[in-house]
Amino acid sequence: MIQRTIKQLTDMLIVPCPFSELEASVAISGVSIDTRTLRPGNLYVPIVGDRFNGHAFVRQAIDNGASAVLWNRNEPHAPQDVPVIRVDDTLSALQLLASTYRSQLPCTVVAITGSNGKTSTKDMLAWMLGERFKTHKTPGNLNNHLGVPLTLLQLAEDTEVAVVEMGMSGFGEIALLSSLVMPDYAIVTNIGDAHLGDLGSKDNILRAKLEIMHGLKNNGTLIYNGDDPYLSAALAGKEWPFRTRTFGMEPSNDCQGLSMVREKRGSSFFVASDPSIRLFVPLHGQHQVLNALAAVETALLLGMELHQIRNGLANVRISGMRNEVIRTDGMTIINDTYKSNPASAVAALDTLYGLQDYRQKIAVLGDMLDLGQEETSLHAHVGSFADPAQLDYLFAYGPRSASTADCARKLMPPGRVFHYSDKQEMIRDLLRHIDPNSVVLVKASRELMLEEVVAALLQSKSLDSAKKGWDFHEANV
Image (cartoon, rainbow, N blue to C red; front, side):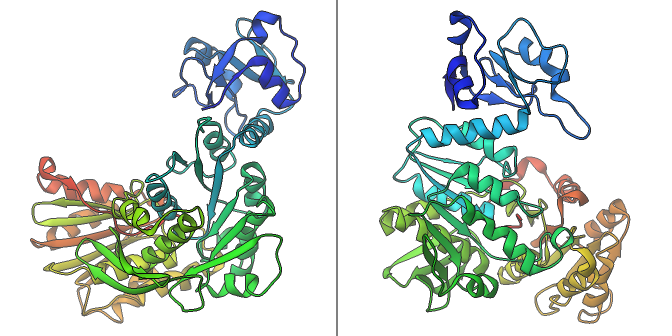
């Protein structure tokens, strides 16, 4: 993490240093915007939001050991007992501090964005790179205008490669993050329906995601999904001030996946450049193989050998509530309750259908948010993938998911598709329908809180016997 003196911080922030020599030599170690997680020695950065003002918590920050504080000039009652660095805006100062710190580090930075697969790709790449490099990745979902600066400020001076995830909900956000990160490599996983409500069309989503190019170094490399028609149409065959590389299953890609095989614990495949080494990822579905190919291509460009990549990929673990598999006696639960959109929901069903040796397969699908005017048709689209040959029951929850259930009922036998507006009622009915040796997929947008369904399923079994298994499908947007 960043370790600098007060004088060095003021230089980085381009503000006066009105401190005594003793105060100017005070060292900070790390940065925090949250007094609940602040550690002794941190620089406290109070953020002003629509419903909160971090300046109100400065006393708690000092009591918890903050060594210094950033402070908006127009805020009254600045503390007197720690160095206070006054700035015009603490958020802008946090971002400037992170960008300046990143420019002082010799590490290679990989930035990742896309509608689906960002977190899985981030996790896979970090596990691969960890076989050879000192690697740091975005923790959790810190992928926005606050999380990305904090990720950069967490980097150790001797970090060799940083893997930084970038999310967005509108124009300009990825451009800002990319300008802070200044990536050497940028990955775009795909263009999907997520954020249609904010941006209105997939063409606009494409524009917003490709803002990752704004901060990409001129000698850098853009790595994108060559199987994605939106990305290919926008990027292929054009002159750019950086290199471009593609990944995918089609022969035209620079990193082509071959001979994908669904296995009990995941998926295996080859890359066309070296078909002598079979790669295994402990995740199911072609969408996860595509994420793996993005990571493989990046690791190869960073000079790794395929056998090193194989070892890291085989051991990958994905971030929580995404693809989390929990096994109990007689039941397997796929907890994919962090996020959902049409592409990831269809991929989740495909993953469920590909699982073997289960007596019963059940899907619990909740509303997908932020789909704009197309939300009804897109929920129905997911329902059109209900396959009576591969699915025993579909439980839909939330007002938007009524369209999912209506479409699925046209395909499934009577009494196999249910829709609920009451979560507890759905849970009671779900528990009555589960047979021994069942696998249950639970997937929805985060706001639906369908982890409560997962908790109820676990409570119905012996929780002590539950054990986490291998990870499945990525729903992150």
